[in-house]
Length: 125
Image (cartoon, rainbow, N blue to C red; front, side, top):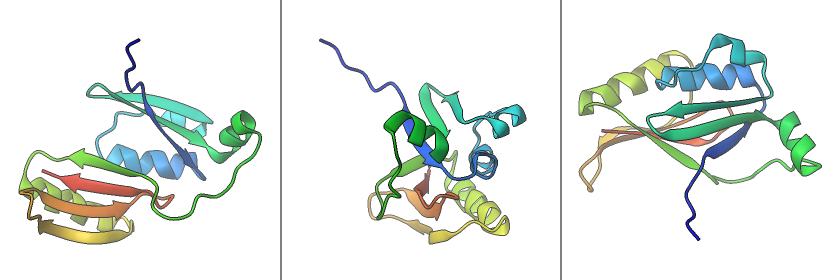
């Protein structure tokens, strides 16, 4: 039996606010999706599903607010300078930065921000 990762799903409090954030990271999401309860988008072969907490309640029969850092998504930028520029742009739009861009010992230019729901979003070259 072959098993393959199909999609990564996240649950959000405010669909419009969350989709605005992910559009800034380069995902091509139509504005009409802002009013949906569940949105899936393909981004270079990786499928990201974004669903509201209300949708999660309908599927799972309830919702318990997660605690701690349970998820990290990494977005690859085209260059070291692009990491710095995207981080700066996100900070200008009021998002929370957890780690300013730095040169990691593993060789990447790396930064960490939070999406509107507190998920860790890494930027790397």
